[in-house]
Image 1: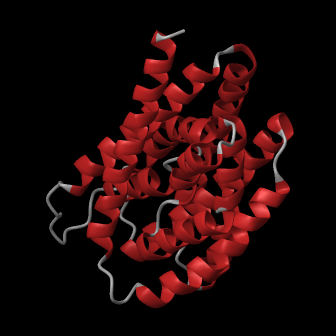
Image 2: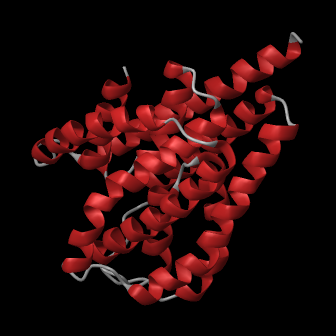
Length: 254
């Protein structure tokens, strides 16, 4: 099952460009019964491992805007540490039902935003005005979300770059991949320090993921990306809603 989950997640990443942290955490909690803090830590580590394969090629192709990346990290890195601390506090002092319910809420909000973004009309070819100075302020709450739930770095980061910068689509992808990698790396380190990790689980996910990346990379030319992304966000909305309902129902019977 662990190999299969890693395989499925990696296929989605290769086909859509998003999904490492977003999909991993709910799958580990729902199907393997992994405690939420460890699931978040494992999701971040898996995301960092997958993106490590992609980062060198993006740098070699000069598809990373280092100035924009720096602005994103100013807000994102403190945010991911704050999110890790919040999760640590809830894990120690809060009930598990509350923690799982909050994770479900984060997943639902992420999915709703992405579904809304999917229905926005395509922009004209005119490039957006550069408002990159706003990135540190937007990346702080995004970093908090990543540190708390492991979800959203790739999808929400790329949406912000498309709206606020004059980067080309290739630069948006490259800059966002490096940003997501660094957030996942720092976040997984913080979570590993607080919660510990299951190295065997992570190894099985990565091994399954390698096969998934190969299949997804081969299949990407035949499978349209946009409908698959939309299906991913609808699935995430359903899963997040199930988290909220299940934990609210359990809490009402305590």
